[in-house]
Length: 328
Length: 292
Image (cartoon, rainbow over all chains, first blue to last red):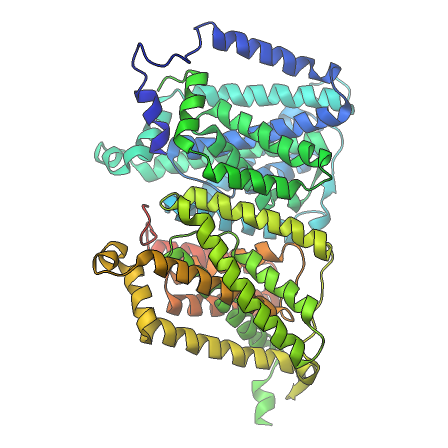
């Protein structure tokens, strides 16, 4: 996505009256975090459960954004690695209900699944990459229907324990706080990752792959590494799914989930915070607003996708890049 | 007696695979041209099939009249769908991702409305009474409609091959697949060709839905299933190639019937392997007329 790089380059001093003051972002961030932590005491259980779902989707959106915003590849099968992570966490849950252990196992499983399938996916570029990841996602979905424990009915899992010695989390407020903490950890790891040389190389590949190759880099391997990391993040979101719903079924890897992650990444146009915001928006449209309008989530989500397709992407990118003050 | 040697349980399944493969070809041939010629990655293609299948369910009355009516409506509906698709993606030329989002949005809205109108349970569509029975092939009974469907499928195959490889319209379409810039430079109206292919592909998909409803019946989720298999056919067969689509569709059809019968569960992986093989042979597959 070379378009995401352009607005940052136009940031000459003296222009851009919308640029927030230097203390703006940290203050906004702390206020947002405080509000997020206080949420269970402010709203009812339904909204808390919704917020937890939105956090899970935000993690999946970050996974997609690593590929969309950095490597310039659009995946339409990220939910497959969420599913791998969820089933791994579910089988770990039969041994221990300790959440962090499940999270680590799910992350590892997602990464392994991604490295196994990714060497096929990263051969393709552009829309073919989208087709291949879509195909892979659907095949994982089909395989889960066939072989996963519980079949298409899915399986139930015992409540997760956040830390050793604590009681199992049954109330949605505690589950939400646990998911929030995990999301922040994943987010911090991603924030570190996108400031590395590796992330810069990915941006270089997105902008002009032959030049990165000419500089002596094996772009296929770099992209495979990115795909693997993205798979790991998606796997982590799988562990969070079962923490929230205490249930996993092949339906968790439905195309809609992958599409939502990709759309959230596109809404975020090149920024991780933007991708998370996009995930919140889409979950709100699908689950919350549709509830107010008589339960037609897919229609509302479809309208969101249509609207998003016609939005001038470049202008949106400029907005989110300015607001997040990204240094590239 | 000679027939008994030929007809085993696997040959019957393989015959099913031919019917399935020809159905997939009818759907995927349209998609491969839409992606290859029009450069539109339409995720609403399965939706068109499902629309046709529901149409058949709604209008099927067990006679030929219902089927004929359904086919007539399918052509109208397919034309409208193709024109609508062309209008929707027109502002999104050279923005493949936005085309994906737009067609996905349409697919979502349609799927939601289908389940609102037709309910969530699968509907079974019976073939016309005159061909509802079965014939005996050796020791086995085989539905007449499937044999008829294979015949229709072969007609579609021959017709499409003639249209694309022999006719003037086909030459224009192939010219646009091969080199859109050069085709435009020689005075071909590529925009009109693209719209025409969108309409043709949509009509094929809706018609396939009407005729294929007794084979793959209408139910929620069928749109995605059909779309996935069509995409696999497109990837394996090579985008924009009718010949490739035919071979790939027959292969996928056999994998999904014979493969499932011989090694249940392995079918998904055979398809993945086929995709892998196709992508390895044609490394760095790009779509004609699209920036990679």
